[in-house]
Amino acid sequence: MRNARVRLLTFVFTVFVLLPLNLLADEKQKTVAVITVDFQSNTMLRFGDSFSLRAEEYGWNVIKAEIFGDYSKADAFFENFVELEVDAIFNDMLDPTLIESALLKAKEAGIPVINGDAGFHQDVVTNITSNNYFLSARITKFLFDKMRRDNKNELLAVTWLDHHGIRKRTDIMEAILAEYPEITLVKMHHTSIPGQVQDSRNFVSEYLRSHPDFDGAVWAAWDEPAAGATQAILNARKGDTIYTTGIDGNKWTFDMIRQKPPFLATESQNFEMMGRQVADCMNDIFNKDQDSEKRYCGEVVPYNMYVPTILVTQENLPQVGQFPWSETGEFSQQYADSSVWPSLDGNWGATTNDDLTLNDYTLSALITPLLFDKMTKDSKTDLLVVTTDENDASRRRTRIMDAVLKTYGNLDLKGRNHVSISASSAADAQASVVAFLEKHPDFEGGIWASVDVLNQGVVEAISTLDRQDNIYTLLDISDF
Image 1 (tube, one colour):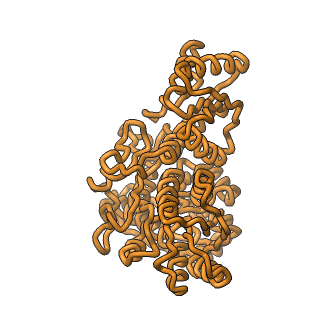
Image 2 (image 1 turned 45 degrees about the vertical axis):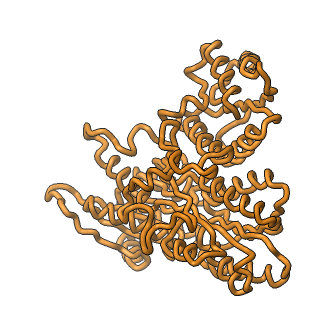
Image 3 (image 1 turned 120 degrees about the vertical axis):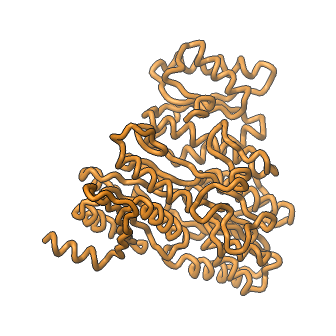
């Protein structure tokens, strides 16, 4: 039976044996597996190839598999991984909530699984990804601001909800849309994988045929639907009036942006760096008994590991055929200077800030998941929100926080304190939090505040009650 399963595996999988560079004779060569939705997706392929190149440097064997969008195949693949006794598994963008039984099989077999842009799950080591909340906030504001300047008020959207990042991007887009009352989302289309480019082209083409007076924009959750939308717009001869944006930043995406409208911009993700980090994380696990410090993994997980992104427009396109970073994924100085790092003491893109890099939407999208990740890592589930409705910045940041919270099913919103903005706001916030915590003595978790003066009151309240050990604020995530 085992031989039959191995033959099946050899038939179904494309197996790449990567010869070791410096393999010791007495050391068993590692075998790792990478499984993805569809390697025809450019981003999934980039992620998988970058991981494989890094694995080659470590001298590992790599087994590759794809489910072609059919999640029912995942269990069989993971069973074969277990039978082959692979040393680790890289989940390249499969939604973990749709493969929970497969992940459990690997966990029970003692095989570590690392998610890549797939969302965190209790049965994986960590999730290495971009901050999907932030990149959606920045590209969405870019698009909506242009629509506002151009007096365009109709929006089409293309999404795919079987991916954690796309769900998050869509939630953030809808949260920001509420702050642009002049823009109406006339239709949300749920595309499919494989076939996302053609399906999106067909959707936009049909909509433009049936609505010839449409004069707006297409928000696409990633570059491939944006490419389909671009083709449809050009075929309808509306390239000068209707435009679109994407997320991912493939080389062909840059070429389409270089050709001017209708493809305006993309949030460029460094999948090359992410793939290297997945392999480096595995290497940490394989060498966890050594004394050397862990660069990525170890006892600090579980949590999400975020790699910064760049908003690429016609103004800052990389050279033809290149990414904004090195082909091996290393951070260039240009990349570091124009990227937002997920920590309070990081770069924050200040050298290139143009009100798109840091604003109420992106600021909340940047730091809120860090607080929620810290709570998740430390098994803290209680959340209190302190906010005000009288301040535009507070309202916008709170909208984003609510959209982020929607994706953290483990957190429990215990209360929402509203404090007026005045000279006594800090004291009022402090009093409201003290009253809340005295009423809820078992509260352990985080307190999120929408503006600095309210957060000041929160910190004072926690200090007054000597609760610093079991309650976090936004000030506690700088060293996370």
